[in-house]
Length: 254
Ligand code: SF4
Image (cartoon, rainbow, N blue to C red; front, top):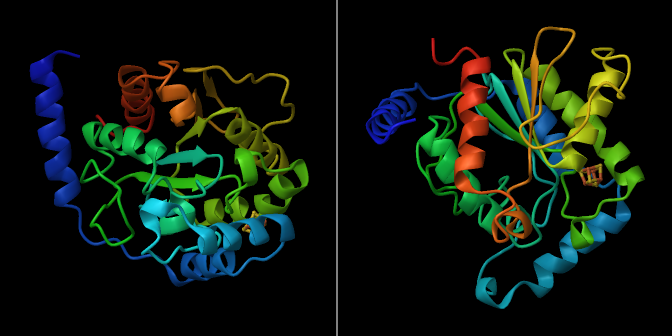
């Protein structure tokens, strides 16, 4: 994409996001989100998240950590699902909104802004005015896990929340899985729903694209963790290409 085209796209997208009427979350989706926030199914993760919220990181010691499960965030009419692994201990576990207040979000939101999915390039705290258009962000595990490593049982426990949220997002056309654990979680969802019959036909790789039997699309990306972005495994241009493709596959550019 040339610089002029890029700027034109950005300007149009920003205007489009700004002009979007307020999006109301339905009562049923609100109930699902409240159920997520109140969930205590995984004692190890609940204890860890509450503990992080009490000890805090020095830079945030004046803040009250969310320290609860983090529900999905975005546009209920989303055509694109962005699926991550789990809240960051001092990111979403602090702020209560996915990818908000940590390095992963600092990398991702500028790309979502550039590609027209977000009205601003920063996600700092829950009341910062950030709005998404045509995108919903969720994770396969809603509580921050120690070392970013949820157990298989914790991932299975949390699958119920993803299934519930997705049951309300009936305009989805594209799923973007950020990292292998998100990909595996989405595979488990697709199998459980009977959308795919076998996982063996699908393999995680950055920029892998599959058309699912129901005609919807699956896109894979490396996770925008500092581990990947600081080492150059994932850079901004690579990540932008994923979301430009997601827009096209979702029919948002026609
Ligand atoms: S990880 Fe999911 S299932 Fe486990 S306690 Fe948190 S919200 Fe509940």
